[in-house]
Length: 85
Image 1 (cartoon, rainbow, N blue to C red):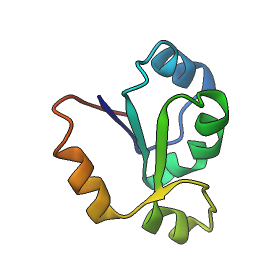
Image 2 (image 1 turned 180 degrees about the vertical axis):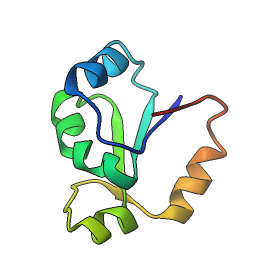
Image 3 (image 1 turned 90 degrees about the vertical axis):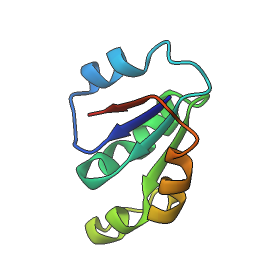
Image 4 (image 1 turned 60 degrees about the vertical axis):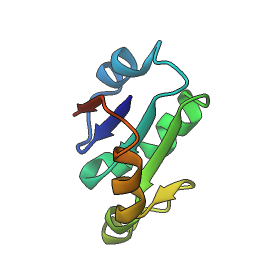
C-alpha cells in the first residue's frame, strides 16, 4: 500500500492511520506533509517513509530519507492501492 501524506495532520490521527500498517506499506510525505517525515521515521521504524525532495527544499527541511518526483512515479506503478491524506 502507498500512503501519501500531503498536509500536516494531528499526531493522534496519524497514529490511528499508521498503527498496525503492514511493513510493506510505503509512506510518501509531500507538500506540508514533509514536516511529519522524521516523526514517522522515528515512531514507525519498520515502515518505509520518504519525503519528496523538491518539497523539502522549498520548505527548508532536511529529511533523512528523500525521494525525487520521478522515483515517486516509478514507485506508484508498483502499488495498486493508494491512500491519500
